[in-house]
Amino acid sequence: MKRIRVGVIGFGWMGRAHSRALRRLPTVFPDRGLSPQLVVCADADERARQVAREGFGFERVTADWSEVISSDDVEVVYIAAPNMLHVQLIAAAAAAGKDVFCEKPVGGTPAQTLAALEATKRAGVLSGVGYNYRWAPLVQEARSMVASGELGDITNYRGRFLSMYGSNPLGLLTWRYLVSEGGYGVTSDLLSHAVDLAEYLIGPMTSVVAQTATFITHRPQPSAQASHYVAGGVDDPMGEVTNEDYVGLLSTFANGARGTFESSRSMVGPESQMAFEIHGTRGAVAWNFERMNELQYYRPEDGRHAGYRTILAGDRFAYHGNFVPGSANGIGFEDLVTIEDLEFMDAVAHRRPFHPDFNDALRYVSVQAAILRSAANRQWEEIGSVDVP
Image (cartoon, rainbow, N blue to C red; front, side, top):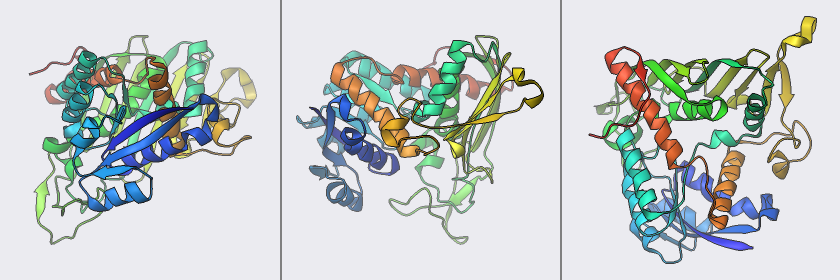
């Protein structure tokens, strides 16, 4: 059993999700012959450090992230810190010869994503980015259906990631709502997943026209270490939101398909609607993370009984049977993180390329840069390389 020694920086939601996933890898995928070892966790919050040590079994904890990177017994660094810290942490880890997995969007701006990629290329280390929805077994199945030609020529794609986490006007003004700390808003946070999945499923986009909006312009100021999901009071001091709540766009794909996308963090109703619909000349498929164990499939040749049918997830699809046997026994979000971490750890163990990596992250921010230009000038924009000031 090959042991891979891991350090984690940032022990919020995703830092804990990856830590749980890494701990359970040998139990879920015993045939892969690898076992991550949780060596050291860094977080500014004392309670988070206590949980990391006592609840997750990290050998050491620290308030200083540099101790993770300088530790000789750490081979891989997982970064789940706020966006605007990503580049500093990635550059230091890469310079120390550590392979790096970073939660998306890898920096807070397109230029920072480019800087992160260049740091890992200079050092010759492996990189990975957290576009975990790629790993859903039924998303993998949809991709196979597209690639095999089962859906015919793809004509239309509809992608969206609609969430309510920012819908409460009294939700605190944490780093995620500040361009100086989180970078861009929903175009980095949510739309990145929707666009990455679209290009993973049907290929690259070539041009976009977009609009953005900020619907909740001021929020209560937070106390230290406040959660994104805690509300303030109507009489609390208020501060200005400096990035976007919403983006909507039209797109063209290199294969001739046309796309529509929406992402919002403040829309009331959809709670975690990361979803897509793919329409081809011979059929269509649709998937929604809120019902992640179902794939909707349409075949015109069904004639008088034509209509969307529901394909239920089960152990006949990739990865699913490692978590639960049979059909219609569902898996969940952290199972996708576990699959993602399995593939990244396997790439580390065998020194093979991993995708999605920082090249894939740069691809998304190339699209994002065109979206932001279009939203500013209100016209179609071609997707090109990232311009660095």
